[in-house]
Length: 57
Image 1 (tube, rainbow, N blue to C red):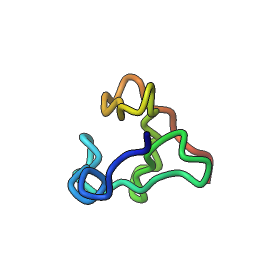
Image 2 (image 1 turned 60 degrees about the vertical axis):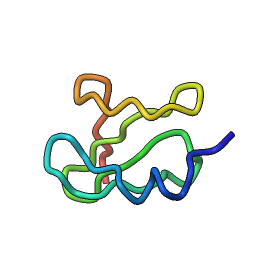
Image 3 (image 1 turned 90 degrees about the horizontal axis):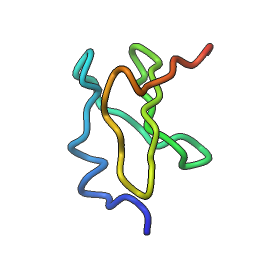
Image 4 (image 1 turned 120 degrees about the vertical axis):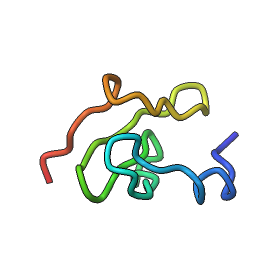
């Protein structure tokens, strides 16, 4: 089961409050501003800053 379109429309980065987008491989949600990638575990986005990784580009 993938994330619903409605959920993706309302999720924002908890650090900078910018909308997040699904990564190409659908393994996480990426913030365009701070480049944090929040993991998706068992179809549930983990929107905790301490669980995020920062993309290099």
